[in-house]
Image (cartoon, rainbow, N blue to C red):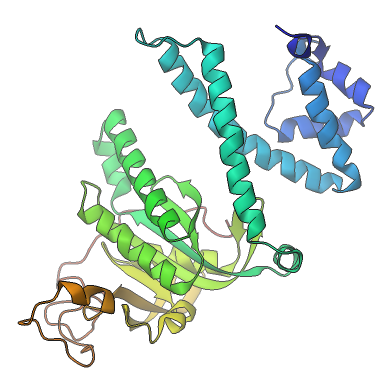
Length: 358
């Protein structure tokens, strides 16, 4: 082992060498997600000392509160990543067909991690300019937020075995990431039975919702209910906060199985787009909003993107009839105003919690 990685410092040794306030150092330590442990136990090397020196040296650029917030986000993100990696490394290390040592596996993962992180960082930096970054940090920015929620997850989690539940979550998560990123969106986070995402524009948001529903139709996944809203929100430390977040969550909770509800702002942005059909269904009474205007979203059956699949015997009208059998049409025979067959309605099997001001 090189001298750089030789264990030689305790936590208090590092605090003394860096000459930082001990109370702040302990708070920073906790923000990274580390337990207090033994302050005198040697557990750190020169590389650890150098990394912490760079971080605390940011005090000229970041206020202490911002340093602690940054440490918390870094700690939370890397802790989840490390937990997953530890499980994978342990599995590989005990695989009789594996020829790599644990150190070789760790080195390979570290290299990949740096490459992927830098690629993402370059992408986000390319999409920002100074004015945009300052405005987003102070006054918020215009965003489109969506929630895609697995229907009946609570009852499913009681019926399925742990391995089946893991397979379900993995299938849903990987499929959602593929669909959302494929349309230029970003997965903000997964919340148990739901995924929260942002979309770059109204059309992309609509495509994401429709493709997520198609994902369940082409697999063994349960149906989804999706809610989306547009508005000004605060994007901070990898998360999004504000009214559109709350509205999107409420709409997802109010939607029936296999349907998408969107707010009025997003509906107006999609108005006139020939690819989509948006239908107002009146107001929703949901937690925090007594009269929330909502609209269903489906693919326009006469969308230009679908015309290549049509035959001469399948005529195209000049306009889409708002009645007929489209989901979300209040006049559809045998359906309610959200496209569900009457009189049977989809069950709302759980209440969403913890989504106020994500």
